[in-house]
Image (cartoon, rainbow, N blue to C red; front, side, top):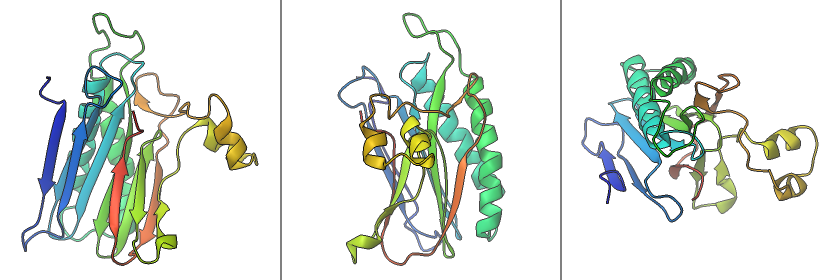
Length: 219
């Protein structure tokens, strides 16, 4: 097994931390290596969760996801020292996305026996504060709010960069859009050949007790 085939992280959990954040990743069933990566950061006023999924049809996708997750989390933690506002976090996420993009561009573009496309990755990140949640995503990695009571309060916090979501935005019924053969083809990503850097950033007021989950696309 490769060192990254399975990983578990835990940040926080002491009185000095805002709250505890945990993450786990596995290689999955389809690929010969784990192409997902995660990064956690914490402080007295915030907690950060970042999940990245390397695009399998590009060179070194496992390195791309690791580079993106670490760069984004580090940039965000540096920017959020103190007591950040949701609006300040949203601005910091824009800048952190640029750092993640630069990190992926620095990944080697050649992989022996691999694909020829430039290394690429999707990204989803969430910051939790007392004021609420701020999320950012590029690609089709997602964040959810899971509220056990009532179940109707559970929701997806992010919008996929995919052909299906683009069709829905133009008025195509969701069931028809997601039934299309190329529905899950992504339209934005991090990488040297990305069409443009356009992260979705959203602010959600404090929703009450519940669980924040961030996931890469299922393999």
